[in-house]
Image (cartoon, rainbow, N blue to C red; front, side, top):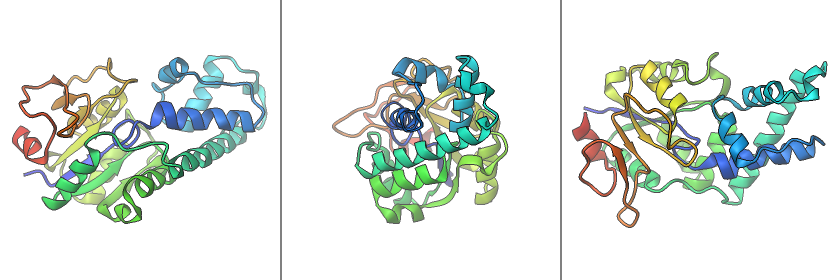
Length: 248
């Protein structure tokens, strides 16, 4: 019996990376007078690093930016990330980032079936709140018993810490839950916590290694937008709670 679904956010609930976070980062760079710009290809490579502040630091080091010698670099990174979060929330408020196909339906089905909901993500709590409130309404925050986000654990994905935190807060065993992820770092994290994992990849992660996944799809799908299944003998046009129960 599946007792809980645990969802990643960026790339899983919504295609937030390319047209959300990347755009918000670039706006922050402009606002701080920096000549940095992350095009789609550059940002795709930077996604190998989880966490926004960590991503900025990696970019500075990898591209040998002169800012790496600033004595206030740590403060600069924190300020950039805070401004980026502000920009991202504004994008969400303008409905620029919808949920991925089938996500709202799966959440509704799970609630009707009495399956508990939780979130395990490296993005900030503010980003999670903004996405849920703008895509599903303010009441949706109450749908999720636990929201594990941001710096609440010392190690971010691919470490399993965030999933361990959520499982502990739910007071459930890994065998009672299903994780939903979209990337290699995500599945390394969920499998590290011994969670069965369903992957819905996106444009940035379609070529990732998803070894160990319970199922790999391009999206959860709907009746008018069927899923394409990459890994598993799957007979339906879109993912349902009943199908997930049968898988486990």
